Length: 284
Length: 294
Image 1: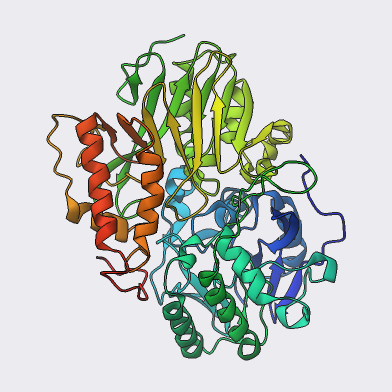
Image 2 (image 1 turned 45 degrees about the vertical axis):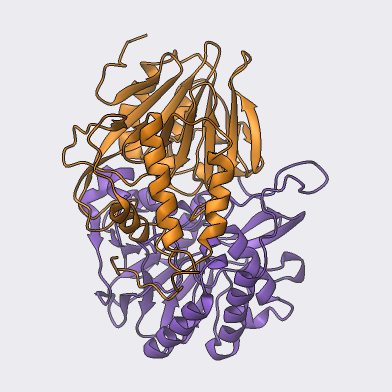
């Protein structure tokens, strides 16, 4: 097993809004005889008084994210908050290591299960409810309605100054490494077929979206984005969206398309030259 | 080897062959597998399948339970016995958090998963922070949607399925030797007032579980999205597995183990009845808010 599956320079970190940094690196996923590149991001928000890490990144990426944090936080307000959208390990797997490295930091969000996984840090876990806001100094971070979610314990996050939405599993889609999409925002990735790549993720990670009537969820998504005045979307599993009006319709088309088409045969044991099962166990 | 099978947290479900390792957890609104309003206690269940020449561990438990689980496993098998790990849900702490510590401590032969790069997903720092390379050395044996795998070399086939109803990537397992279905996050709908349990419901027990309870449980946990979808198709998928096998025990990841033909039949029918009542032919799929309790 290789520690990293990638063989080219990592384009991250990248500042995607003033004081908001996209961390981690791409995640390769074997699916239907192809290698899809996905994101399993973490984000750093630097406030005037405190910094916050949103998500902990893929477990394999922790050494990378730790080094990125060390560099970006030099001379900046300390990391005092860790927010994870939900309990799946691609989102929260690094929380023990983050809390051990940053003794001032507290975990916030829906903190279910974490006291069972890391009881030694239970005293540093703070539950948030919808609308609760953390003051980072000149900017706030609010727990908001998780429109597209899997676990019932999900919260989405919203940064109030630059109006950045952190939707966790929402807005999940892969990208094309061969087309140079790694580290690009969605609007820069001209050849990205959002409909197709969103449908692939529905197969892999959001199976319920293939059953429910997604028109209801798309409508609710529109309402949330309008109510919050979202300018940037920073998804855990998709390229960052910086032009919401232009890209949102494509994302919604992808959700609707993914819910209409049949499953594409994950785990069909026909990956590549060698008979290795393609996996639906590769995203969170 | 210690005999700890009389421990309240280790239940021998089939003589010499199958053991439930049941570690209690308090339900106070902070356990994602249960409704936010559930109060009392439940258990997280790992299962040890033992043969003379090998053993399997189904799910590896939460990190907080690692010392207890390690002792429970060691009370049942020698450390040197080849042990295979099979996490049923690849993205959840309860299934995978102790892969690394157990791989370091026991004679772990392999870990079964569909993802050839799975070891990359199991690193929560327990060993890697100390410079250990346990996960880099862990053998991953890939499995497909449905596969029969023997435990050891003495002929105990176990069938691994992709779960026919799931939220995230999930496996079910059927063990013919003990007539047990390991159902992961389904059939987890029981809990108790006391941490003492009991954690097995069997034929003849006073079992108050009813339709309303199961319906509410499913809609207030990870199956919040079921109302108004094509549950006929989901039920057919479940029935493909349930009707194919002779099942005397349902062994879920959380809550009481369900034992005996009457008990199994009752709970299978309850789940099926609830799913039927949620079908799109009689209910409407709509937006479901996060904290909407039903």
